[in-house]
Amino acid sequence: MNELAAAEKINSPYAARLLRLMLLALDIVAAILDGRQEGGG
Image 1 (cartoon, helix red, strand yellow):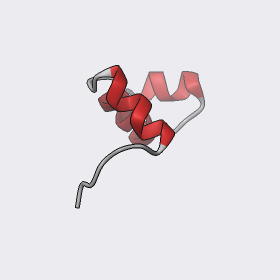
Image 2: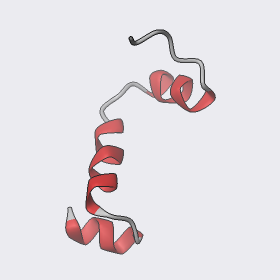
Image 3: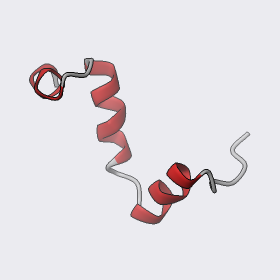
Image 4: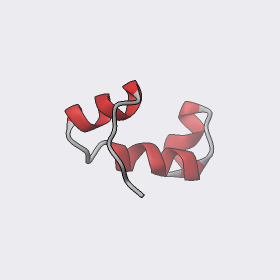
């Protein structure tokens, strides 16, 4: 994780969060980025 973060010039916790997003379906990621996600709390 540290090597990946260093290569992308970001910190390790942020890189870990980005990697977790890769597990989501593409339509969910698109909705989040577009601000179209529902509820959640």
